Image (tube, rainbow, N blue to C red; front, side, top):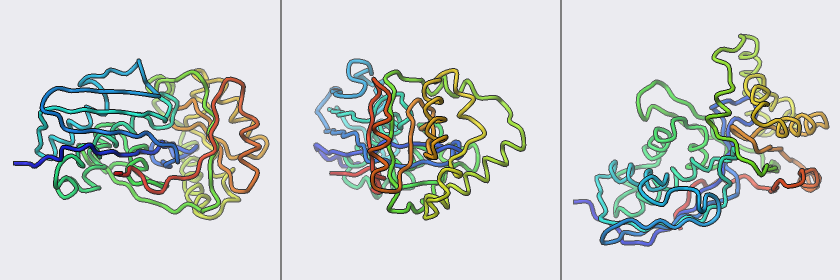
Length: 303
């Protein structure tokens, strides 16, 4: 019989940015902006409290994404708690391209693992990451949310759990500024604008820029502008987020390595020197939110 910990247990999960320009569905970066989730075992029932992002909008029953991730992890752990209480303090904005769904999934798995006495032994980090990627359907956000830092991820086949994640270094000078529009864009809408096929030349160009971006983030920061050039997906999404693409293009014209964060509509710009963040924050459009953020190197953390 699996032994449960009554709790409460608490985890923090970072926001993430995927793609980073050319690294479509393969590159992800964890950012120092965190959701905090707390859970405990109850004698019966389900209680869900949400404050911050999604408050009053997301379901507070078994459909809640954190609850669904917890149930999947409990099943993998062979556990069946009689009841649960969950509290979510959401800081990561929803439907803005900053990995809110991945934070929920990763946080739920981490909570469930912590509520099982030998959870980390029964479900190690690699297995937990693969479960998270299976639930999300792709690994580019859940990988940095779980492991922290800059992660290259993908899948080897079509079987559930057939995912990999490899961490890569980030130069300590690198930070980011995110400029967040007030209106969301659903990932499904953004993906729906992408063509079914792309020219070979565009695919080759994106592959080259993706490789360059890995080197740029690892130390060749002078190559960040060139390394963040995308040929496959950003311009195609303009109909869903014209203001985002206008801002990305304006920043890049001024030499700023700016990209669409994930599926958008948030704009992410890399910084490497003192004063750059303040200059970018000053360019935040009226009505948008802005954050100067460090890279999160810890990933999901149990407190």
